Amino acid sequence: MYACTEADRPAILAYIEHEPEINLFIYGDVETVGVNKAPVQVWVNPGPKGWDCLILQYFDSYILYSQNPGYDAAAAARFLRGRKVEGISGKKELLDRLAPYFPGKTCRVTYMSRCNAVDPAFASKAPADLEIRELGPEDLDETLELLRSIDEFSDTYHGAEQERQQLAQCWKCGGMMIGGFAQGRLVTTAQTTAASPRSAMVVGVATRLQERGRGYASAAVAELCRRSFAQGREFLCLFYHNPAAGRIYHRIGFAEVGGWTMMN
Image (cartoon, rainbow, N blue to C red; front, side):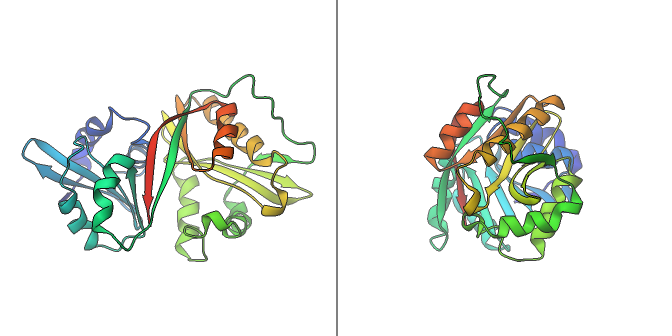
């Protein structure tokens, strides 16, 4: 496994171009941060017929991709075991081969969906008591407080200082964050990450437990999508594992494209 440099950028982009949704994180991080510029580093395992697999490091999280369904998972595992790894993610079929080498980690399978435009028939409007606006770095503390209160995000937001750096990276790399306020308090958020001129990933969709069921998250995601498309992006992607959430996202305009595994 060797570390790529900027000279490898064209080859990296060519390697991932056939599955743009699955490789949205890799594409966005390479385009907005770089190939070997903190917090991003791209690694490649060479094979007899070209690259066997590619691994992108983002802080202490890793994404694995290969064009070869039978890639050398043992070699990828040896590389990852020698590093500090917070999590590993990637296309479900690829992570299925890697998971047996990490019996102590838990695999969570989600559905990846793509949206090319907000469905005009999407009838959900922002509730009358909700003020929606774009958030900025000045909202960092309140956003972190909300995210850390969400049980579903306990593996990602649990009080570590690095979380502040990772969230701030959203704005540094062209991401957008939308917040919804009720009575002056932030009650829902949605953001894009791995943003590039072509695409972005919707993440961090969260609503305070006592405020759920009021359409707040739907309104935030729809507004995030509208603003992202207004900036000229071709498509957005997001993950979901809750069928109820999936139905809401489908109403907005998302359609499922495949499985994605997160291993923590």
